Image 1 (tube, one colour):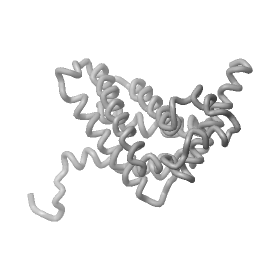
Image 2 (cartoon, rainbow, N blue to C red; image 1 turned 90 degrees about the vertical axis):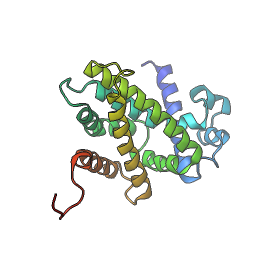
Image 3 (cartoon, one colour; image 1 turned 135 degrees about the vertical axis):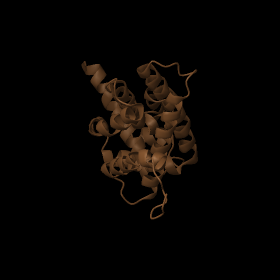
Length: 210
């Protein structure tokens, strides 16, 4: 990376961190592009050289994490069952995701903005739209791994929809809880993913004769 590219990266990261700090402290709707640019002492025009708008800045770091998860799924051993491949891809890439985030902004700030996304209707709607797109991408990866036609065999979309539903539940519970740490989110995610098999196949009525 040459000097010019490093300068551009520093400017982008400074804008991103300023945007996230303002979203976390002031609120997404209450923050303007002018506020973000002023915090870094650049023009609005400079902001738009790096981001299409506030929404892109809000989702920049989550998109990096999503990319790592997708690549982790692609890298899973071919003999691994689809749901297990998804589970391991998410949980085993957690540390790498954390390191990627830390290269740009503190993880704690990222997690605070994650809560802002959950509590801001416009951002939550965008997040859910992207989640649907991500599920389709993962379903096609799973289908390719298993040698299936994703449009002829419903199983890849079903297993990814199940997986995505569990992730959505853990996101919602985490955002409503007191532990804002990345590790807290990881533990909650692991706990719920570990219950998928028993929830689908087990007898929920304890203490009763079959």
